[in-house]
Image 1 (tube, helix red, strand yellow):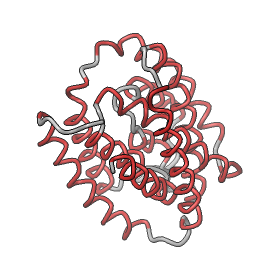
Image 2 (image 1 turned 90 degrees about the vertical axis):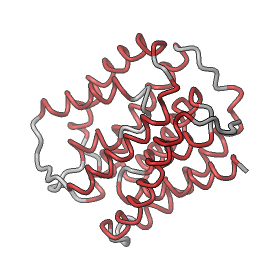
Image 3 (image 1 turned 135 degrees about the horizontal axis):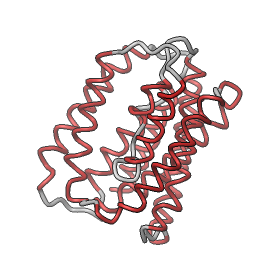
Image 4 (image 1 turned 90 degrees about the horizontal axis):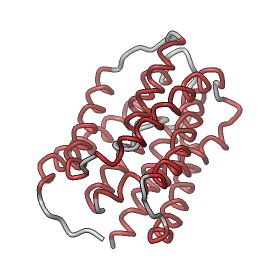
Length: 244
């Protein structure tokens, strides 16, 4: 039952990311945090997001803004390297409430709807470094990346494609980082294959809906669901739950 729920979540949230360019990874992280062991969540989530963003990159490659991606990814590598050094100090007991806070902060950011037009070059570097620092611990960094990539002077396809490329690079760096931290992916191979397949299918559907679904209407209901999930994770953070 848990595997079925996670596969459905991977499919649905990949549709969301295919339409909005982000948010799906945050939602999937919330669902995974609710039903999986905390120390397993971020490494497994990273692989699924690598597949989801990689598929989105392949489908929208021609629309990506490569200059901005390059400026973003350079400092991100440095951030991941530093995070790998301090990763063993992270207390995973705080993962559930931390993810809950991230969800609520993301909703607040979306409701504020900041206008982003032509951010300065140095801001891409700073945000990339910040994403690299936190992505091993929080996992879903789409909202943070959106500070520079969700631009009002870009077409939706350019926004979605550029964020997909940037996040693919970030999630790709997670694999050697988690290996260095001692995480063993082998026991989760079957789950990863199932969730990755669901993510690819959801990404394909999301790309077909990208130009058809009104983002504001869709986003309203999506934010309501995220709010409930975020509050639940904060409240249930200290409660023992059945997990695989």
